[in-house]
Length: 358
Image (cartoon, rainbow, N blue to C red; front, side, top):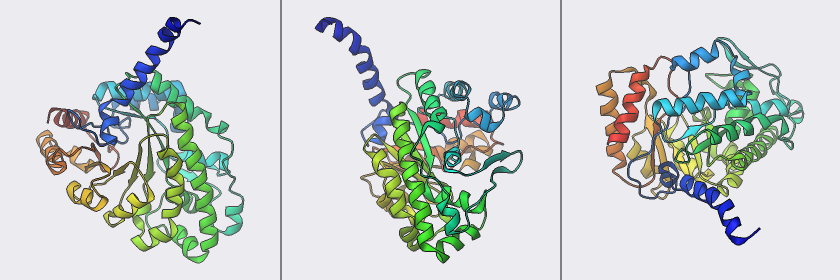
């Protein structure tokens, strides 16, 4: 092939890659100056959208997650409807547990249920290492299909559950309010706990890298339940494993490390890793950024319940958060958790317009 011909073949791909690299979201993750603050929303494709509810009337949740074409279409349509600056893949935290030997079911009205929970060292020993990612190939296909259907200015975000949150589901057998079984195993049998967390951390690391390899530009780690711990327990029982889960991904691209429930953990989240630290609404954004350090980007942090108020309140509260960010490079606007099912769509559109117009 001639040099001229080779240039014609490779130039479009290089240009596309550069457009993705220079998107608002990617630049904010790198703490570079941007023309405006980028915004995306956790659970932005969800039950508050009538289009999504129409799809779910025909398809079960796990079935939708495992249908790459339909999962990508749901997210692409949502991004176009809302006008957000990034697309997180449509998936769930828990399918990673199935090839590791957990019997997972999503039940109507009850959410995820694990029928063979882990309660002892012997139970931990049966949890398989995730050496083969082929059973999760549908997730990589969702990444590819979502990437293929979006403009290059919209990064695709892959994600995984953090080791502690996955461990909590494994031990509790589902959601929990007190995490009694989880903490009991953690305190009663520390070697078994670290064995469990190590297996999960290695699995999450491989999973995030695979999503980067499939075409995600960013990944996010969700530690949805870790706020039930205090700082000392986080450092002893969680931090080393979260660091393992994140380290290899950080060599591939921006990693958002998001945890909820306890602002006292923020300096430890930074220590565990992450290009961007996600913050919930339990602390003001400027206070959170000082706790984390201004050499890290920050994501957040409107209370999702604000979107249940009137549109004037939504706009006012969004602008207050932007004022707290004070134009410092490295802010990604998001909610402090996912969009609530009861949220009016017009209020979400108002939020996006307020941030984009500020």
